[in-house]
Length: 266
Image (cartoon, rainbow, N blue to C red; front, side):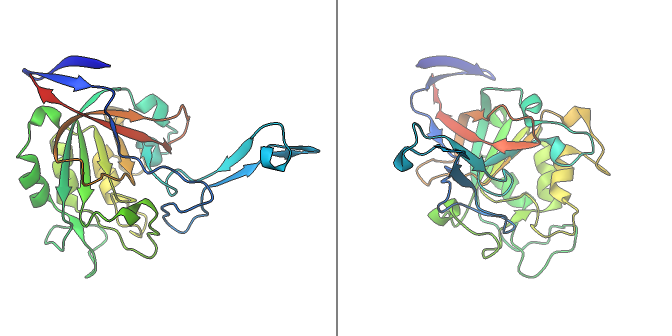
C-alpha cells in the first residue's frame, strides 16, 4: 500500500510495504537479550493429562505456554505505570498509530553532565550536547518520536547479557532536553534510559514522565519509552514515520514491534 501524507508544511510519499522492523525478535529458549539476570523467556508445550501440545511428541497441535518478563527479555514499550502507584497500562497510554519520527546515532561518552546517584568512572552517557548537535540537523516536525542508535552498533545487542556488558544511559541534562522538545515516544537500543543499578532513583524515567514520589501525572500519560531495540546500520539517520505495535496487554509494559517507514518528499 502506498500513500501521500502531509507533515508540517511538507508532503511526502510513503510505501507501507517497505517497513523496517527495529525490534529484536524474541527467540524463546534460545539466545536473547537479558537484563538483571532474570530467567530467559521460555516456551513449553502445554500438558494436561494425556494431552500434550507438541506435534513432535504425538500431540494433535502445537499449544505452548509462554513465560517472559517484558522489561528484561527483549524489545518492550513501557508507560507511566512503570513508576506510579496508580496502575496504568500501556494499551491505554499508546494512543497514536503513525508517528513522525527522527532517527539519530549517538556515541555515549564520559561527561560533565550530571546524574543521580553520582556518576562512576566507568559510566558512559548519552549527553545533552550530542543530542542537540544531532537533532539540529533534522526537521523538528519529526520530534514526536526519537529513535536513538548507540555506537558501537554490534549485532550482539540482539542477545547481549547486560550483567556482563555495562550499558550507557541518559544524563539528567540529556533527558531534560528530550522533554523540552516535546518528545512523546523515546526509543533506545539500551536496556534502560537509567543506570541499571541506580539505588532505585530511576532519575531519567522520572524526568521523562515528570513523576515524583510515584505519583501519577495525567499530562504525561500518553508518553512511552521503548527499550532494547536494534537499529541496523542500513537504516540512515533522518526522518521517518513510525508504527509502534504492541499486543493488547493491560500491563505497564508489553513486548513491542516498532516499524519505520521511509519518507520521500514530494
